[in-house]
Length: 163
Image (tube, rainbow, N blue to C red; front, side, top):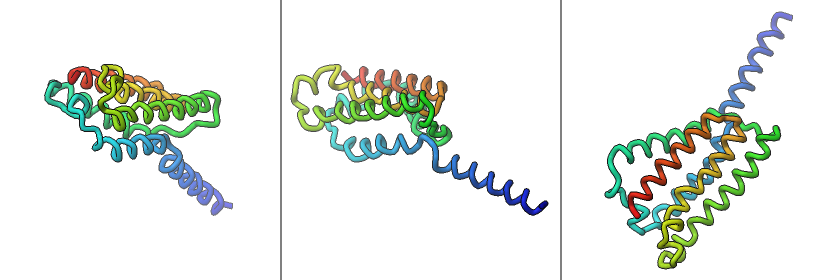
C-alpha cells in the first residue's frame, strides 16, 4: 500500500508537467508568429518598416512588451471548456482572421487608397488586440489582457510616428 502512494504522487507530477508544457496558450501565438515571419519581410513601405521616426525609449518599450505578450502565453493554461474560454476562442478566431485580412491590402495592393491611409497602415498594428483579448479570455488572465493592451498602444504609437 505504501508503494501505491508514491506512484500516484509521481503520476500527478507528470500530469502537472504535461499541462504546463503542452496545454497552454502558447499554441495560440504560433499562427501569429508564423504569419509575421512569412509575410513581414514582404512589407516594404517605410511607413510600416522604419524605426527612424520613433524615439529609442518607444522602441525599447515596444520590444519589451512584445516579448512579454508573446512569451507569457506559455504560462497561461488553456481553459476553453469554460464559457469565458469558449467566448475567448471565438474572439481569438475572429480576431486572427481580421488580423490576417488587415495585411492583405498592404501586401497585394500597396498603392491603393486604403493601403496609403492611416487606418490601412495602422490596421495590422491594432487588430492583434482581438487575438490577444481572446487569449486573455481563454486563459482567464486579466493581467495578460492589460499587458496586451499596453503593447498594442505602444505598437500603434510606433506606427503613428511613421505616418
